[in-house]
Length: 79
Image 1 (cartoon, rainbow, N blue to C red):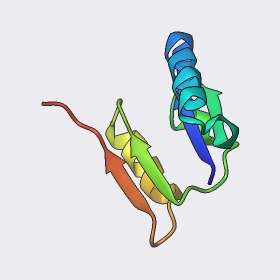
Image 2 (tube, helix red, strand yellow):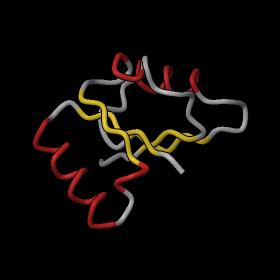
Image 3 (cartoon, rainbow, N blue to C red):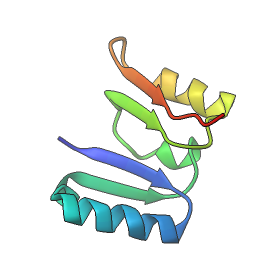
């Protein structure tokens, strides 16, 4: 499998890379520095989208539009 991560902050990208390496999944991970939805432009169509933060109406709308009919959208929210 392949996973793509979009993250604007370099310090968080470093954590993502370290966690991927420690988990043994670094080869299947592509990290794009930027903000969704603009940074998603060159990524392949997803089968699932996980929004870990920044779940604005615009980001959710773009995620839903990018997903195929049977795709999954998961949003992490803290209240």
